[in-house]
Image (cartoon, rainbow over all chains, first blue to last red; front, side, top):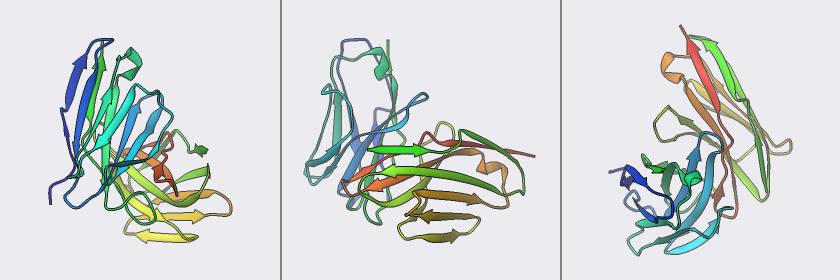
Length: 115
Length: 109
């Protein structure tokens, strides 16, 4: 079974631009979560989607948004990029969600650099 | 809210045992995951505890005390490939997984 895939793997953008990242979950997984990972803050939860509905979101500004399609694929968008948005963005999928027994499988991540 | 505390770094010798402690304060807590992350790679699942007690899986074991908000990951017979960051991640019933900052374990020969 193929793992979680994320595209693109690397991205360089300039301040003020916007970016869209894509995540394809493992076949049959309906929950997709997004995380931002930086050296200073560690892994921080962005949002979680299940059956095209956002069930929870973390403490990020409204510039960060996402959506999920009927085939469970998900995208996240960051508008008006700032230097501090430079990070590794990880997507994880699971069968139903994070509870109670469903482990998350992570994709390789998208490394975003904002200059 | 979430408050997760684990040591930043630990160093041990090949073949030794290391215990990584994690304390947490999580609203709506329902279980705790441990993930391993090698440098430059994505996290991979190690263990999940929902009930109090010890779960053993090969060289790795994980313990949970829900009343104390405490967990530990025990790595036995350390190997060089165990050098990685270990992430404590309590889950809550609002579909959210929160991660600690991670403990970087360095295994020396």
